[in-house]
Length: 249
Image (cartoon, rainbow, N blue to C red; front, side):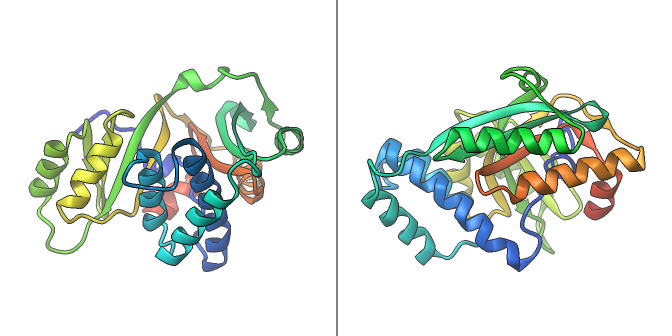
């Protein structure tokens, strides 16, 4: 189906090496803490927690770690004051960037984010300065295994309530509206599908092709620094970077 904007090439990927897994699990642990704080520690009655657990499983987080994170979050209610804060701005080359954070110290996080933008030739803006260029959607990625019937997967996704599906060489990318994300994910799980990823994400409406090698290098350094920051959960941008496309081919 058409209308999709190369999500796999655009969303900055994290966790390629095993050494990164601990960092990813820490970030997911914070998402679990917020979900438990907002809706309690029982996944059967907390849809947000169910969604985070699905994301954790897609990231190969062991069940024991997930249970421990939920128990820890339930035991720390009232003592951990995490906030979800989003920052927006531009990287070199006019590339729009959205940084999603979870923090227990907003002053520290704001200072760190501003430093990274400034150090790499970017500019931090006000809320809303670039988010209008993106659509918030649910994104579910299913690995394309040998023998999989493309039509069957597409029908299963549409029957589950997906708004769009794109068949790629090594995966199926299923897009949902935000309100439908949980039910589509649960319907596909019930149909026996497992996911490479399952999360709410920001997809750019149009992309910005960055070809100048020096600019690309600055952008990559900035994205790496943002990913390395403990408070940063996700980084979204509208750039098409040559190296990223080569890695995905």
